[in-house]
Length: 142
Length: 98
Image (cartoon, rainbow over all chains, first blue to last red):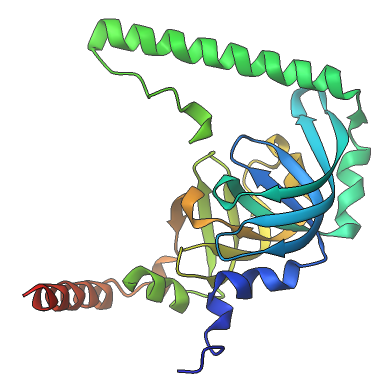
């Protein structure tokens, strides 16, 4: 079989169209990076330039962003790579308010800590009453 | 390899992909590769208010390792054929092991 005939069904075939495009990369730890995809390989290791990291806080309808520069992202941490539609990019942001990075980061941090505490408490109750074991501390990080 | 082949026959069908971070994405299956990485077109996120960053994204590449479920259109899957293919593959594997 011709090596290229099946190209549409390879990782390379899927990603080649996105090179030099503005992309959104969602990482396993919940980070959202927006940058220009410059290179990749079969493991979905990615290189992005002019990368921004954005934090979203839907409950207060606000967001924050900071410039991060060049990223080499190890493939195992990638959840999703989306092409950003330049026409659709700005309206959602205009509906939100831009806040200082530290403020949103602190908000999200506090929420994460509360969530972890609640989970820990739930697990403790389940363990004491029914003998269920812990999840292994992985939580959302899968 | 069997499931990879099944996915290849499902291109251009509308599927729902549920990720391990509980994000559910509906879209047209455009391509799939050996790791079951999935490429979707015309995507829509089920809970858009919670994921405002996804509004600007129309097509995306999802890494196979973070997928929990893929919901397929019932009409597009021939379960009888799939059963037969599975039996054939397992008997081939047994023969090869001998």
